[in-house]
Length: 106
Image 1 (cartoon, rainbow, N blue to C red):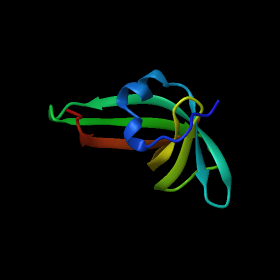
Image 2 (cartoon, helix red, strand yellow; image 1 turned 45 degrees about the vertical axis):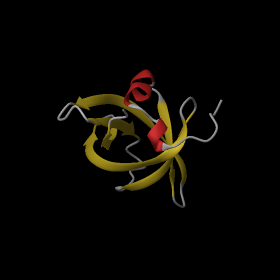
Image 3 (cartoon, helix red, strand yellow; image 1 turned 135 degrees about the vertical axis):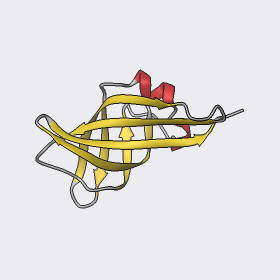
């Protein structure tokens, strides 16, 4: 079941970790929804006052998408917008990265 309203700020590093290997859907203008599997989360610990991490998704080879901001939804996490960057074409699918870098909550 889709959660109600959410914002990108509510999509925490911990929440993404709990949803590794699940499918996120991105809305591609003029082409509908495309499923992307969350493969990895990489923590970046460059400053104690900041939360920084990156996500790597896998999408289908036959429907690559370009770099951009996409409405994104997830069955357990709700919906928000993600800025996705295509980073590799592998035998089993396209790879897309999303990077988070924001102040830690006090």
